[in-house]
Amino acid sequence: MVVIQFTSTLSGERNMTQADAKTTVAVVGGGVAGLALGTFLLRSGIPCVVLEKNSREYVEQRQRAGSLDSRGVRTLRAWGAGEAVEGHGEQRAWRMDTGEDGAGAFIPQQVLVRNLIRIFLRDGGDLRFEAEDVTLEGLGTEQPRVRYRDGEGAKAIDCAFVAGADGFHGVSRTAIPDGFLACHSHEFGYAWLTVMAEVPADPAAVMAVHSRGFAARITRGPHASRIYLQCPSTTPSATGRTRGSGTNSAPGSPPRCGEGRS
Ligand SMILES: Cc1cc2nc3c(=O)[nH]c(=O)nc-3n(C[C@H](O)[C@H](O)[C@H](O)COP(=O)(O)OP(=O)(O)OC[C@H]3O[C@@H](n4cnc5c(N)ncnc54)[C@H](O)[C@@H]3O)c2cc1C
Image 1 (spheres, rainbow, N blue to C red):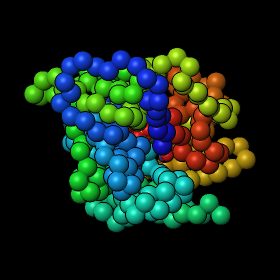
Image 2 (tube, rainbow, N blue to C red):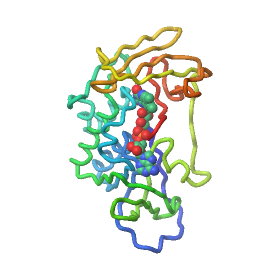
Image 3 (cartoon, rainbow, N blue to C red):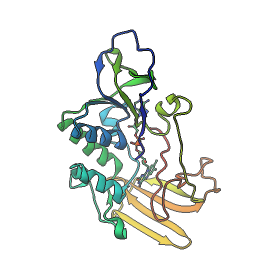
Image 4 (cartoon, rainbow, N blue to C red):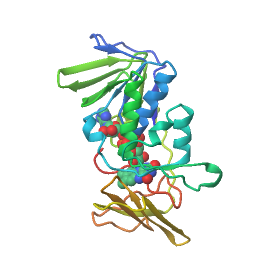
């Protein structure tokens, strides 16, 4: 999970028009990062609004990752949100033998998102789906404003902080003022070729870790699995590019680079 957060510590011009709502933190993006952050904020007594551009139905069915590493599981548990990876509907959790790192979980990302949505709403969270055309104004000022559009028309939220949790292709990255953004990445020198197959994975995860590379088949829900094969990062895929370049993954872990429609 990656959360980019801007602090609004510099003074500047306030927006002249009235906002529809005020909050402390406006979180852009209702994925794993945005929903987890929203839950952590609420549980810290900090008001927030989470804006998600897609519908609830869409994000609860969007298939992507299949595992959450031990740090993610530990963090959710530390905030009292461990139920997000435990025993709900189609959720399938396994303990991973990761040594001192503790237990990760094999859980389809859409199930994790669905569980986090339920927890956030149950906590009284303000989660707005189908918030389109999000734009960020006044970053670096005392009162940033987030504008968006929904079925009723144009809306604006004034806030003290904006948390950009809308993924690599979201609007937040490009809205960060010059000089505020620091990017850190690490290339492991290999990639994963992956195929999404409309077949159940039974057992839910089979992984082969070898000195020559990694291969796996991991559940993506009751009717789908994703198959991985490690290859040199220079190998072109059928679409002309490699999947999941492993920029923030360790050998033996599934890819963690978001691609495709968000
Ligand atoms: C094929 C594949 C397999 C993967 N496997 C794994 C794995 O096994 N384990 C793992 O840890 N990671 C895996 N990943 C990576 C994992 O999916 C990402 O790290 C994770 O989705 C990042 O979560 P996020 O909340 O930061 O971003 P996202 O999940 O991308 O969430 C961002 C949210 O913001 C919303 N959004 C985007 N733009 C806007 C906007 N302008 N306004 C409002 N909302 C917006 C999106 O709809 C989305 O809901 C995989 C990724 C892919 C593609």
